[in-house]
Length: 304
Image 1: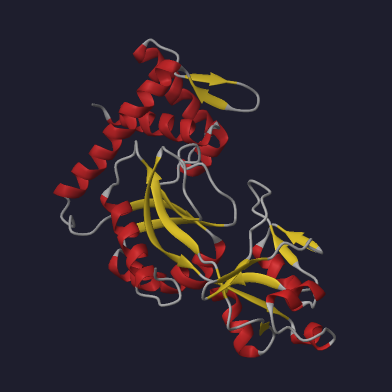
Image 2 (image 1 turned 180 degrees about the vertical axis):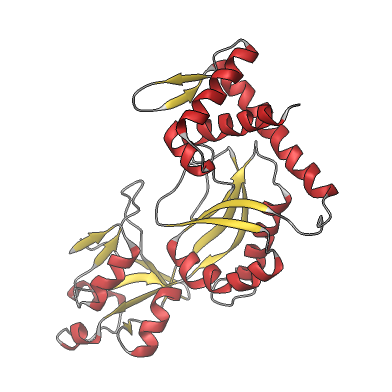
């Protein structure tokens, strides 16, 4: 198989995954015209139309979808073969695209990345950190860390830890409010809610102590879909919030925030590592997933 055919197959797979010639060209660091020529040559050689092109999106035809599945597997096998016969075959190499919630990236994995880089210097990471739930196949993501219950049947899901939460507010705000000694006293304060960007669903806040459980059901004074903006609102004295403990901890230590009802605990969010069923993990992806899982399992703030 000629090298130009492999290049065309890689280009085709990235176009299908990203739904755009422009985005695929950026991801592959090549010209859009080069990709167009590769796809035209590939379609001509195969004698079938692989892509539907509209002004808004590029999608695979029926033949193109079938070709994509086989081509993706073949390319992954080629990468594995090259790694197995390389002089440095004990070292995983290549690009890994990963997505994760912002708190996981900022407060756990990114600070620990020097260890990963020293162990796998030939792996190039493309990291996405946000509250958005990405489509792994459409966006060409190799693996992701997800919070909450994963229901997508097309994803392999492996639980790896828990995101713990804490109820807190700014001391200046609390100084002007009645004392909070029980969950019922929270009704006297302004409640700030977090909503998930993709669904618009509000994150439920449930307190528990022994056999007692209380769901905070008061109407929020404000709602936020950005974790950074949410905790900034608490710092500004706009009300009380339920935020990841990893994010609040340095602010609690500095006195910028104060924990409310410390003898009550908030429900944790399960964290899982996911990747597409149809995509066999390469050595480089396995290297990252194993490192990320171990890093979370070894941190008392995150371990299950």
